[in-house]
Image (cartoon, rainbow, N blue to C red):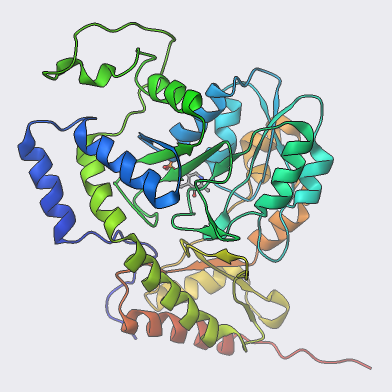
Length: 392
Ligand SMILES: *Cc1c(COP(=O)(O)O)cnc(C)c1O
């Protein structure tokens, strides 16, 4: 058994990141400035987008995208209940309604047929989530969006770098929102990025991220800048600092090798678990490149004499960290009480949540770490396996 606890997630920060941040600290410019501009350009290039706006979080990016689209109280935005708090709270910021559509049982992305059925007169946007780093069915969603002239705003918090049918997530829709939170595939500690093809939308988000000030107000303390600015709207404070962007620039350069390491780990897990009847490895798709932000294993509970929570405790006893993604939004007190949901209203999201375990999958894991996870999961499954008896 391992001596040291293997954490579920751990940022992959090397000496190059440390150097770049220290240089920025010494440069005399630490908030939004030249490093952030460089990070935006490099990120836009990486995903093939025309515009990238660096922000303090993915939550901020989604909030600003919906603001730029003019979301109003009473409007509806179609999204998935199988996600993190941020995806729906940004809709509630406007006193608008998140309309949940259940996910598909195989890949846990939002069901495009359900989305088509959920569209009403009040629908203003579709907000899919690329869960674990696997893209939602974007072509089918785009067809629904086009039919009703709706924008798509993507929650791509898990989806860097991800490809869908040969195209890069970040270049597919009206606005794409990435997260650089500490556990994500590229981190700046806290941070996010909005990408878009729409110059006007980008400009609105950039201004609203900095108090609704007029263009380029961040330069007001620099030599080439001006002290003059105008407040054009009551904005927010969502800009990303140069310290964070310095970290992001180095992470971006390393993103392909970090992604490759996560793909290797996913492949090893898949090989190890594919033939075990108590385990269902996560779905992958031919038409996509998975970012493997999460490795969402599912337990076949009828093949086990323990439930998911106990399985997690048994892994913890073996010093393997794990997590659960996600407690569906509609079972949380706020959404239950506000909209009267019951767990069975979105039966796939709720059912899959009950049997899901996310295993560690980060690029700093050694081969030994990966084998420790494999061994702990397989031995726990064997020790608690239940043979299915065929009756009759
Ligand atoms: C992490 C996460 C977010 C929020 O990202 P922040 O950068 O922390 O705001 C949004 N959606 C999903 C699905 C996430 O996992």
